[in-house]
Length: 436
Image (cartoon, rainbow, N blue to C red; front, side, top):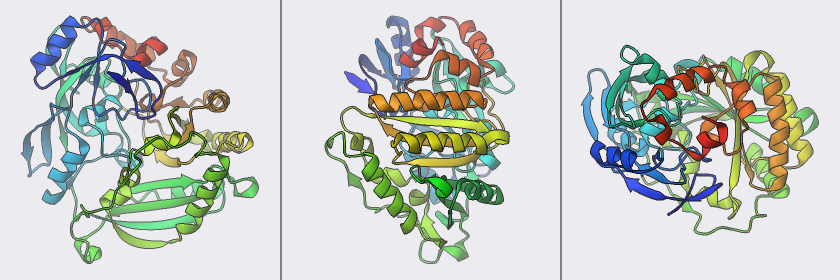
C-alpha cells in the first residue's frame, strides 16, 4: 500500500503487516528484508515508513492490568491515547504527559518520548514508564527498565523504534480531581513579553503559547498564552464530565495547494489573536489539550503536496536571541506558519535521542513547496549556531550534520542499537537518510 506520515510527505509503496500477537511480529521481522513498527501514523515525516514493510501495532491494543491504588497501568503498545483517556478519566486518572493529539499509540509515545504542556514540571513520557517489553529482530523478548537492561531502555525512549518492536509497557497515571481544566488566557505584545510571561507561569501545571508568526517590528513574537490545571470539583460548575459530543469538522478532500498562503495565514493569525481575549474559563480537557483533533483530517488543508513541520528546541540561555532570529527569518520570507506553538521544556530526557532539553521549543507548520525548504535551510543554521536540535518525530528532511550537532549522545545510541542482534533488519526511511 501507499503510506505517508501525518505531513503527507514523503510517500512510499510498501507492504503492511498487522501484529496482534508477538509471534506475528516475530514472523514479520524474520521474513522481511527490513521493517519498522508503525502505530497510528502520526509521526509527521518518514520515521514510521519503510520501503519493504511496516508492522502495524494497532491490533495489539489491550489494557492488561490497572491498579487504582497506585495508578499503575500495563497495556499493549498499540493502545490509542484516545482509548486510554476513555478508560482513565472516568476513574479519576489522567496520563502524566500527553502530546498535542490523542490519536497516537502509547508505543509511539515512548518511541518519540513525547513531551507536553507540562514538560517544565513533569518531564517527558519516559520519565513515568516503569518498564517495557521489547521484541528484538532475532525473536528474543527483553523486559527493559532503569534496573534491567538500562542502556536498551534509555535508547528505546526516543529511539524512534530502532531498537526493537515495543510490545507492552507499564507506566503511572496521575489522579485528577475532575475532567475539566481551569484555564487562564493572556495576550502579549512582543517576544520578550511572551518569554517573561511563560517564565512567570512556571507554577502552573500546563503552559503553552500560540505565536503570531507574521507579526513584525515591535510586535514580533506577540502571542496568546494558555495556562491551566485540573479543576477542582467546586470549580467545574456544570462541567462534571468530559464533553463527548464535541462537534468535529472533517476535511473531506484536498483543497487547492495555495489555500494556506501568506495572506490567509496572516488573516487567521490576526483573527486568532483578537478572538482570544484575556480571561479565565473552565474547559473540557479535550478542547484544552487536543484542539486540532476537532478537525478530522486537518493535514489535508495543505493540499496534495503535504506539509512540513519544523520543531526545534533552543537552550534557555540563548533562547530569546535565537527565537528572534527565527521569527525574523519567517517574516522576511513571507511564509507564515498557520500554527506556531511555543513551550518551555525542563530537564533533558533520559534517552540519547530524546528531544527535550532545558529551553524553549518552537513548532511551526509550512506547506511543502521549494520556498519552505529554502527557509528551513536558513533556520537550520540558527538552530545549529545556538546548540539546538530538531525533533525526529516531526522531521522529514534534517541533515546528518544537524543531527550530530544537536544530539551529542548520538554515538551512545548507535552503540546500543548496533549491539542488538539483527539490528540491520529494523530500519526506516528516516534512519537510512540519517545514517542511524
